[in-house]
Figure 1 (cartoon, rainbow, N blue to C red):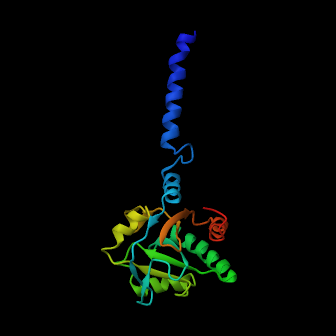
Figure 2 (cartoon, helix red, strand yellow):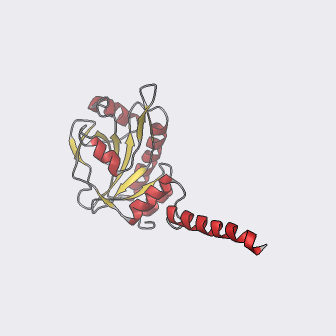
Figure 3 (cartoon, rainbow, N blue to C red):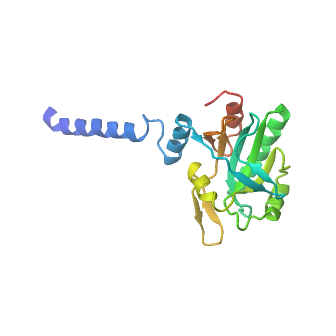
Length: 199
């Protein structure tokens, strides 16, 4: 009986060991969870990139003078997830403004050809992005692939001229490192992170 059970026990132990390895010690059961864990454990340095904002100004992606930058990736004619995440971003902005926090919010377009400053301004106006604490901006086309890779943003064109994409809030710490990722609706977690309450 024991001899018959032994192969099953060994297979379970081996399977458990493999599962432990591929899930970072049972901490990450999805690719998104693994991405977030990787960023916390190994923050990534963000390059010095200038973006064009909704009034045509050049704005830095990197934090300035000790601020923290929260980044979401969008395209302005997105009719669903971008609109929902913008509402969450607006709530974060309102709460941070009330606290007087040194945080800048950036909605970065991954569709820079169609998202002209005029188009970004329409999106910004719709969500009360003031161009100071929160602005909408686009990278140069040559910088876009590197940014999407750095932040692990997946963008897939759909059959209607739009995109399927993952949505999240990406934290760039004051030292210029991409150091955390949160769901767009994780308002309390983002605020706690900025207060030093979470990694």
